[in-house]
Each structure stands twice: as structure tokens, then as C-alpha cells.
Image (tube, rainbow, N blue to C red):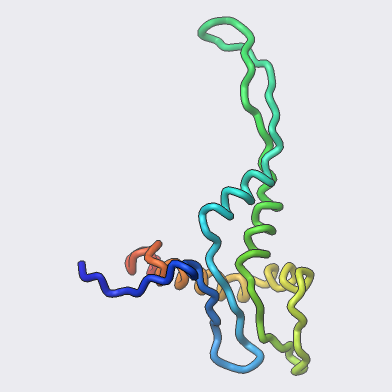
Length: 135
């Protein structure tokens, strides 16, 4: 396999614009593993509970921590969206706010577009192979 890519240690997870028409562009970035772990930790509520071990017939403390998947997805989405140039059907600019991002992320066509963009970022970063991108 040839070494045919550039390395920028100062910008491993670069911001990338998607869309080619004015009023229909979004700027996204991948979330680095350390940030994902930071977000995961913020979404775990540690909880331990005494449970009966059937083998030893003794009570033992077990980890039954709660994970807030909605909060995790929100943090990840907040990080991945860098900006946008979007207009509504009336030609009015859509402000880049958390509230608007949440609203747009409930539109199936917008979600599909963003999903494809993130796949392309992952492919470009070398995190996905061409075959995975097609599936």
C-alpha cells in the first residue's frame, strides 16, 4: 500500500465544508477518541448495587452504571457541527444555534446527508475503507 497522504499533526481532525450551493453548506469535523471518551465519562452515572452471585452464593457489589445515550449524542453532535451556511425555503438564513441544530437533526433527509458527510470524513481520515463506505 503506497503512503499517499499528508500528515498535519496540528490539525488531525480538520473542519470540512460539505455542499456546493450557497445556503446549502455545512461544516463538520470528526470527534477525536479522547473527546469521545470525555463525553462518555460525562454521560455515565456510576452506580453499584449488591447482587447475589449464583456461583458463590454471596452478595457482591456489581457495576450497574447508567449511561445517558441522549446526552452523549447531543455532546457529540455539538462538537461535530462547526458551522453552516443554510437558508430556509423563503431564502432566510438559518442561524447556527444549538436549537436549530437539534431541529434539523430531526429531519430524516438532513440526518441522511450529515451521516454521509461523517462517513466521508471517516474515509478521508483513514478510519473507513472504501468497501465500508459503500455499505
